[in-house]
Length: 328
Image (cartoon, rainbow, N blue to C red; front, top):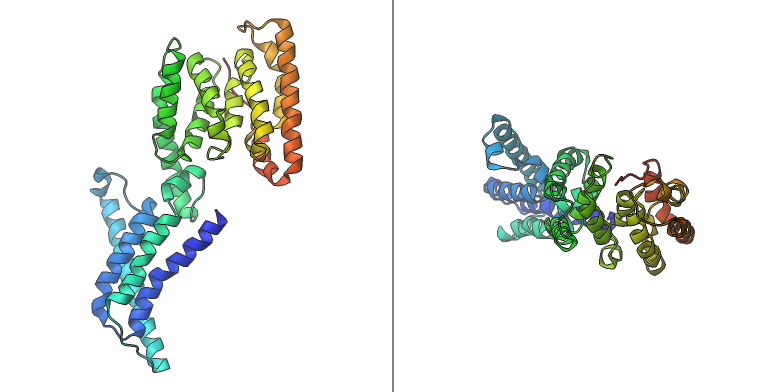
């Protein structure tokens, strides 16, 4: 991501070089309007948080005032760049003769380049923003979209067939078109299922299965899928019995994803108190003992993977302060 941000800054520079070069070439003030149009299109694509999201929002006085403010600011910016270019040309005594289309093309090139490097909504799903203003505008919208998307899953009945629930989970997680959006939705589901008065047995099983699939864990596009799956399964011995063997196989196959697994301390706490605290589980005592051993083995495996790759421990430390949730 830092590399992409640096490339984005370089591509954005083309936007400002265009009017600067136009002024340096002695082109007149008639170039202001086309450059302003290019600048406004760039803002629409790269800064969606600065514009209303629905047609009804566009009809409000505040939205119109904000749009006019943006337009006037871009007119001022383009005018200053043109004037600066003309001043530099006069001082240097060098006024190259170029086709007016050329400096416009330079500025316009910034739009597709920046769009290839940056998707504002996808970045918002990851919690990455260009600046504080974008964070303030896009983060609540991303959270609202995630909350709205998971409502149909929370309304699924417990008696729904597992295959149907898993298909519904897959649809919701991929509905945004960007794999990164699934992380926010999975986190929202884990938070919703943390309430002890909510059963959602079929949904819990489907989410644990989906989040622990190798094709989800291996690419790292949903970085904390295994931690979220554990939060959903925790204190449910039947779900943990399903989760632990998959987690052991995944941490062995993809140790570079250890940062997205539950913290070793959380796993050991679950081993000490979780499996035996579920009165609704049908697991016999000896299998519960095996489950405790499995949780401790998983804690050791995650710990070893983190020790081999200390840079992965940073994101995990941020989660340790938040206790694992999820009740059957």
